Image (cartoon, rainbow, N blue to C red):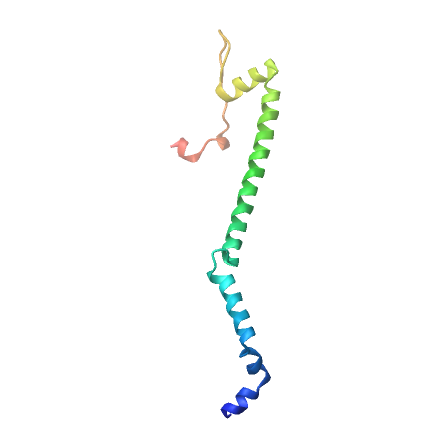
Length: 110
């Protein structure tokens, strides 16, 4: 193909148009090189999504803790929690902790 035939091709004429070249340069610049590029926006959006997920997780944890605190307002529930979690006891009372063999870690057996 001769150079004149290549220049007559409609795609080559379209791409070599100065407005199209400026538009292509502008798009490439905005996607890759600009301070507000698409790539940076995509990274920031994913970071925002992660932070929103964390916020939702902590909201759920706060609600669970509020429900737990509300439950512990009852003295019987508080006593039950203290006995189960911290093995607290009343005076002149013995506590026996029963563990089944399948609940003991294998490392503890040795």
